[in-house]
Each structure stands twice: as structure tokens, then as C-alpha cells.
Image (cartoon, rainbow, N blue to C red; front, side):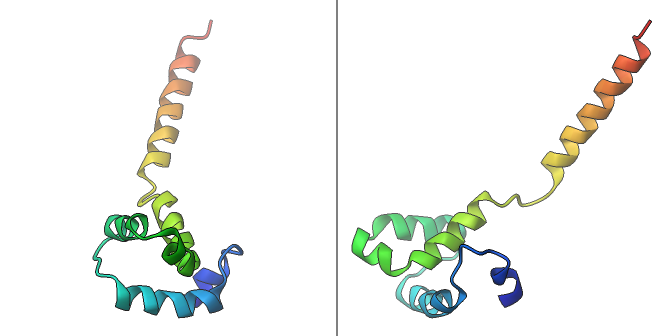
Length: 89
């Protein structure tokens, strides 16, 4: 996991290793959506204490769960090219 975190230059791994256990022990959550709700319900001062945790949650929210959407767009492009090739004069 540390190797993966090091690939994101915006994350400070040392600070995250301190903040994440604190966040887990202080708040009760079982999903990313619940963690977002926890961060949104805290005061700005408390939220600043967990800045690296917030960055990780933001990264998790923007990551695609699978590659299906990209595969669908390539499939659509392939159908479009096939149609265009068959209708050329």
C-alpha cells in the first residue's frame, strides 16, 4: 500500500500514517460515503487535522471502480467506424 501511496505526489505519506489511525479510532464509518459524511459534519478546525485523509477520500471518489465505461466508449467508437466505412461511396 505504501508503494501505491508514494505514486501520488500530493499525498504526504508520513502525515497520512499518523492521521489515518487517528481518524479510524475517532470516527465510526464503514464506507467511503460514510467517511465523506463524517468529514462534512466536522468543524473546519477538525477537518484540517485530517487533511491527508481528506485527500485520500477525494482520490477514492474520483477513481473509477472498473474500466467498463472506457471499454463502452471504445466499443461505440468501433461501431461508429464500422458504420462510416460501410456507408462510404
